Image 1: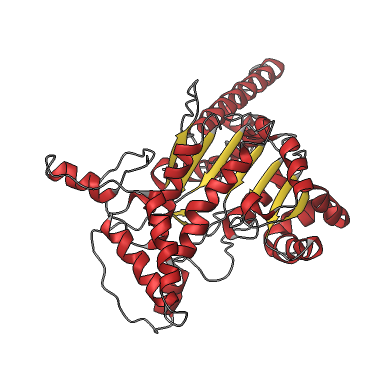
Image 2: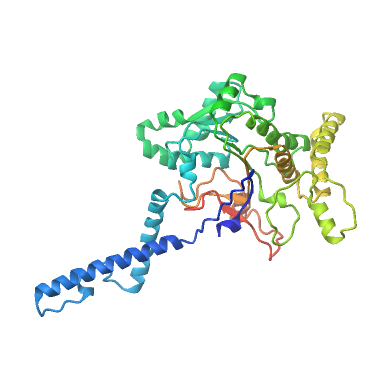
Length: 416
């Protein structure tokens, strides 16, 4: 189930490392449950045998000797088994190593962009709650100075409802714990050297183990030049900084499943290379002999910035939005957002060299499933405006493909 919802592309330098999907159907837990029940029954049978020996001819059935766990009907047993399975799954997550993620990030130092955004904020909470002995987590924050950056961390991360469980766990010392881990760094993904002070940049480059680029512009119809600067050139700047990091073990880039554009049916996840486009791919499949121009990423960037200078100030925003949509559709993408995200992937692939890179492509990310707070989401976003408007009667109907599939995923799939 998990693998059908979360689309993942991994790009790693030799030797290739293959990660197997983790099943979320609870089979492992079921096996543990069966073993637990069998052992319990064996112990109970032994107790019953001993009692028979002491009682002489008195016959006492096993069912009369067992605990209430077994002295119930099948429906009650099924219900109880389900609850015990849930408890065992939680213990397994703590006691087993899984695929080694927890062990891998213990003591590691992170650098994360987009830290005040929905996705990165949840990731930070998860790391601090499950791996409290993680190293420092540097957060690139857009602010005028360090004090302003710290204030944003306090109000937009630490003091939010999402961190309620951490506050309960650490009690009065929760602020001290969080501030000992979260380090604000004034910077900007759209500036050279990420807008960081040189001294801080050198310090981070000496310490950081894992870089996570979650910063992006998710406006579908953003100005083409603005979207390019964040979603296409931003990853390039971050990757350039990553090459100066002496201990770097992972560069993780958050993309989107919708870089697949107008592809139809079941699509294999594969990385984009410079020159690729959905339209070119479609043209090649329909008529291999028909040439289709390669997508020139650098050319698109130059055209966009030249065009933004050519328009008058009062119409530049409108014209650049329309220009971005036009360029996206001409190459087989629905909008400027997914077009510039796809080009960002291409630039990462072309410039990565020996950097270990992972690109993840989530679909529509909705609220939490069960942890840390069931059903938590920040504000009204994703599908929520549509659902709320329909519930209030403000949206009485809308056209939809009855065979269409709405692909959403919880921001936390429990035990995933």
